[in-house]
Amino acid sequence: MKHQATIAVVGSGYVGLVSAACFAEIGHRVICVDNDEEKVHMLNAGGVPIHEEYLPELLSRHQNGSVEFTTKLHEATAQADAVFIAVGTPQSDTGDADLSYVDAVASEIARSVDGYKVIVEKSTVPVYTNEWITRILERNGTSKEAFDVVSNPEFLREGTGVTDFLHPNRIVIGVENERAAKVMRRIYEPLTSGEYYSLPHAVPGGRTASNPPPLLEMSTKAAELTKHATNAFLAMKISFINAVANICDAAGVNVEEVAKGIGMDERIGPKFLRAGIGYGGSCFPKDVAAFRWVAEQLGQQFDLLAEVEKINNQQKKLFFRKIRSALWTLRGKDLAVFGLAFKGGTDDIRESPAIEIVQMLLKEGSRVTLFDPAASERAKAVIPEGPQVRYATDMYEAVRDAHALVILSDWQEFAAVDLDRLRQTLRHPIVIDGRNLFDPVLMLDKGFTYFSVGRPYPAVGTKALKDR
Ligand code: UGA
Image (tube, rainbow, N blue to C red; front, side, top):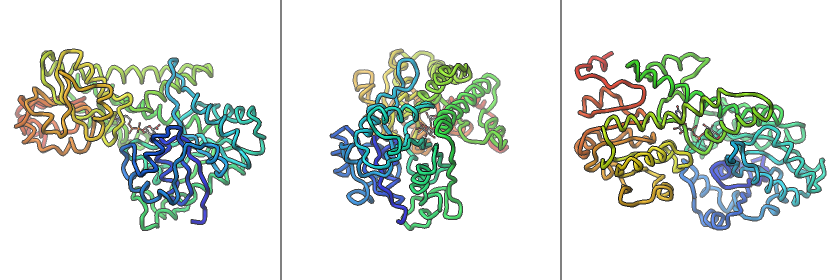
């Protein structure tokens, strides 16, 4: 492709690896750097360390051609037009983002800059990080003319990261001068021109050649803030609907009807209004805390975010109480659990509300049989097998003889379970669903005692509900 650039991506976690594969997919040469030798070796041998739709296909399509993996950051920097920093920015004890990995990478990049480079923040970072990176490069002797720092936040969801990258709502570029802007425009041109979408092998998604994504240019600080504000807003939407769901529970109203009613208002929108057990994952919990910290540092109180966190923490406890009240006592009960990942479609268990709820069940003396289509191996590291804990290899094995089924992640395959077989396999036909995967009326018809979030348990004789 005519826009080809050489891109170094530093970090091969979810963001780095997906970005590396997608940059190769849109025609660039990519050198992906990680300091974990074992991981680099695995990637070079064709392994894929994470569960992500389309990622194995893209990596095998471009490996040994346009994507390579290495531990040598300086060699990658020397060859690259742009260096994307996609290393972790975990939460520190005080709530702010720990930027030590970004710091270390920036210092090393500084020692390898031998011509003009664009250094791109891809990881989620607080406002002003671009200025720190600039300072680090300068302190390490890199001249001002030899580089620019750009913010290009990602909006990828785990599980659908490849599609989100290639079919984005928008591409945000925080940039301070035309020289750096040109490099960034060239990198994304296969998407913004629509050219990529006409290719026969293009990954399918919402964008087409005639409806390509916009590239939004703004100041670097505005781009940094856009990322934090986006995640904080989405987390707020989830906490909002969860608080509404709790009112619905008390008032005997179905929260999904309310969510539909408010979501059709274009100013609100229908997405991220699914009530459940609270948000988790490696982004929302840490980013809400980090954004609150940023606000505080800038002398602003953003108490709304404290409330968002509070509702989210309560939601797990409320659901746990719902399980307890459905079963009366938890000690000695055999419970089947579907879902350990922080949501369906991923093997990631970081900050997973499912893991916390299982730990609460164990503390109360329940025995659990756990099933997750992708996250069991990772879960075993935090919830090891033992007298109270077993892992099942499929849904029906998990529910055999269980007193009840508890659903904690929204995997599509859970929603497609054979309900008749499920009822026959459970010891008692009780389902406590933290993700609202089933229609309460259908569950009643199928003979289940069914509890979900913000949806009243339909009384026997309410079949008319179905015909409304
Ligand atoms: C999130 C954002 O959606 C991405 O745009 C962003 O790029 C990413 O964080 C990041 O900053 O790296 P992700 O954490 O992969 O992506 O997951 P989401 O799909 O956003 O879900 C987050 C959590 O909210 C999950 O626990 C999910 O189950 C929960 N959720 C989501 C709800 O409870 N209700 C909803 O309606 C939506």
